[in-house]
Length: 71
Image (cartoon, rainbow, N blue to C red; front, side, top):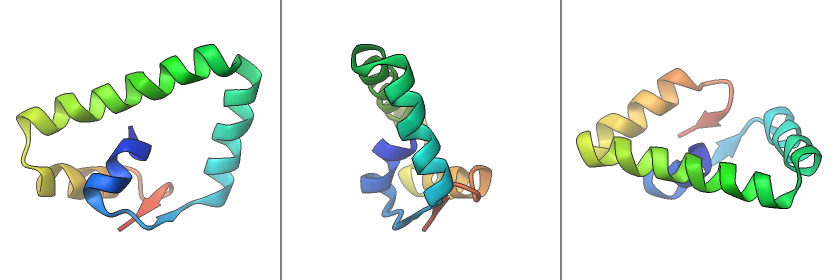
């Protein structure tokens, strides 16, 4: 979800530890399952964006996940 939000919200910085952990998890579950999870996260962002103003959604994500992304 945050990966999809990065383009829409203009997030520029990611916590490298979290990003490395995500890559490790992706490798552990395999590319097929990992890709399904990435698509599911992107779809979740799209659903949220459909019911919330983008700026509000981006602020919410930045506030909920300050350990992961920074605007």
